[in-house]
Image (tube, rainbow, N blue to C red; front, side):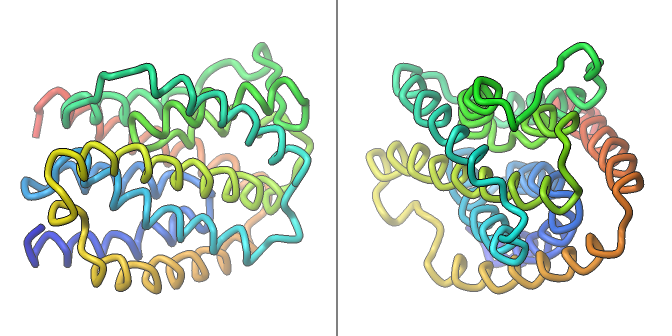
Length: 250
């Protein structure tokens, strides 16, 4: 990783943590797009760096509004995530940068699915387990899975704070698993020298925490109606940009 790449990543860590601090998603997609756009960062390194930053950002966000976490849904989600992780060990395919862009672009389109027909609800046991399986698998392979996770929350009878808090703790778990999954091939093939430097992760942690805290201030004054409307359009625009990158338009 070059010095310029490190500066760019740290800057976007602050911005994307702020965005995710408000909406509980979207920031991770932007950050992953930035990471894989850097020539000096491989897909595996991008996944590890992204996982470390997002794990801290999501964990800190969950801690700040921990009283709103639905722990029953979280336990059920964790069971599904364990199943999803077990399935991933049987898969040898790993995406290249163009394929990651494609998934990053397609994932946000999930917010436009007819939710009145899906009837997904994270508070239901089977749905929470299904969310754990699907979200963990997608997050580990492509780096992000916020739009898929959102499908299980949009029809639930939760406030914006309960949605963000519960999504944050589930995503913290997902990113933790992602770090372990992608670290194995890097360490096996290239050794510790190919891993992101410790100083970089140490610098990214307080930056992500600060951005998350500032985003949380905005969340507190936003209405539930505006929250859901802005979130839908935000991820759609981001998805369109990623699809253009996948097509090599720019």
